[in-house]
Image (cartoon, rainbow, N blue to C red; front, side):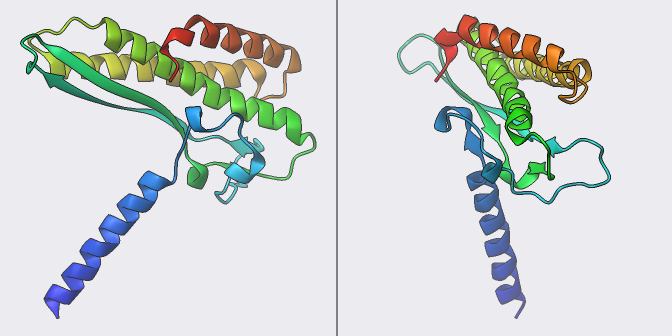
Length: 180
């Protein structure tokens, strides 16, 4: 009986892990978000009308099989439907553009990280160096997300919103060489 319960428990863990892995949308795989992508239950204790949950993931591999050190890496920006939500809103297209900009900011930082990894000179402390690059880029991403919401008052300040849209578009273009 214990073995059956253990097997069911392990199956559940594997299934949950697979489901979590499957429940993301990569920035490169979608042109624009739609409200159908926001699948979580809204948090009515929070004043704002929608929440975009996005983040970066990265993986890397180091090899000397060619006779010289080589670093392969992959960086993705992801949107998490099960953690993103929306309430009823008066101007859904405008708010969706605000939420899209949050996802675009994540993609901007994924591009910055791709550039930093491409320029990285392999050293003795590769694991620590790459972790430091990721952590500093992630801290910049979080700070920009917070500044965006602060300066736009969570989309209420339309003038600031327009400035942010232009700024992020110009930065995405600046890092176009690091798009997937």
